[in-house]
Amino acid sequence: MNRHTICAACLVALLGHSLPLRAQSAAASDSTVRPVVMAQQSAPSFLESIAVGPDRALYVTDFQGRQILKYVDDKGFSIHAQLDVHPWGMVFDTDGTLYFGAAEAGITDKTSPPTQWVYRQAPGDAPRPLLKVDQARSLNGMTLLAPGRVLIADGRGGMIWHLDVKTGRVSPFIRDDALDAPAGFQLPTPAANGLKLHRGHLYVSNTARATMLRIRIGKDLRPSGGVEVFAEAVRADDFVFSPGGNLYYTTHRKEVMKITPERHVSEVPGIGPELVGSTALAWRDGDDGPFAINDGGFIAHHWYGGPPPTASNLVRLGGLD
Image 1 (tube, rainbow, N blue to C red):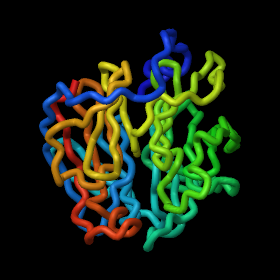
Image 2 (cartoon, rainbow, N blue to C red):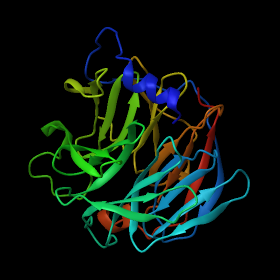
Image 3 (cartoon, rainbow, N blue to C red):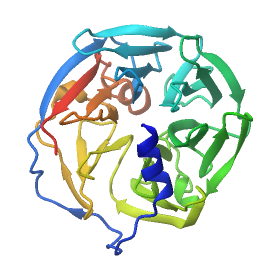
């Protein structure tokens, strides 16, 4: 995300009429996707988050492999960093510094380890621990509110955290029950998960509740108003906005879905086994579609009793929008 994108997303409040809160389903998508596997990570692996670097390379966290991978066009994956922790969500600051959340333990059986660490990697340096958020339970998706200011979703507790990287201070940005899991929810599926800023709103996927939420952000970069349900019955993991304003989301199953600005929901046709366990998306400027990653069924195997996982992939989805 460049500085101009940040200013447009953070400083301009979206003016428009309201629409029904329940997403309207569409029979089919008008887009014809062309999925192409660009790189692969052998099983067991869990490609969890993807970000576009300042060099236009794609950076991917492999939670299970304790690695950050780098993809340069047509050259496959290389190991950008080998870690002693398990990385989750990630985001680049405008100065090229990479931030990511990390857990000290991996995933076994039907558990999700506490994720409380934030790591920082300055350009040309190795990743280093920045701080531990003791109050956090499951740090997940990240997005840049402004240069030096990172928002982090917490998969439990109904919290979005605000990190000021200059002071190293973490504070609550917004707390709401709509961001938490339902009462009595027993599965380790995260609640607040993906985060994106778009046209004056912070969008948040709540996977446990199967809702897409949004919060208006004022010119002072603070929440302005409460949490709004943008779409219901959408089991979204991570998501990305296209240049045309469509929202594409992964499901951590086999589908990639689309929500139009009018809140029509449809499945992107043509997605096959190459994206079983779809986890995250990134869209580079100038491309005609996003890149998507998956876990090869890793979570389905450990949390839901599915078959042994296969390799995880980086897949280019050309032809959207």
